[in-house]
Length: 201
Image (cartoon, rainbow, N blue to C red; front, side):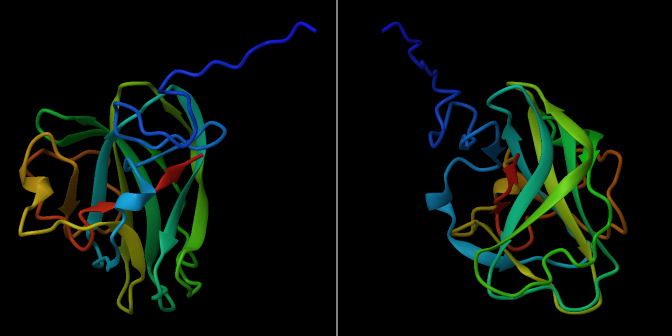
């Protein structure tokens, strides 16, 4: 009986990391960091600190949502602003070139306690990822009360990954809302986790 054999390249095989540093998920999506096994902690984020993780898209596809996971600490009631953003970047300088996708403000996001609790949020408009393009994903929380812990990869042994080009992470402080762009010199050391884990679906 004739059939069609499924063939995959390294950029199509679910569950494998490809050369661009993203874990491919079953279906269409991928992650912001290469492996779930590299996640070492759930880190507190700081209010008004835009925590950014840099990556290259391993494939071309249209993302409709983003998902992150909390640790044991949930966001206390009630933040002023909770948003995801995704920027195109100049990887040679770390500059955020343009805000390509964002989520609307949702102050209930990250508000349910429990380790490994997943929080998904739809982009305001689908995000058209282009294979090989560099991007930065960021989450911004503005709050005067307790902030959540979010899973990610910690900077260890005093190494600050945001200080080395090309950047893998960084934090831009004193942000009241998502910036449309940012210069390469706008970063401080990453606050909390070195790279925050996110899934794009």
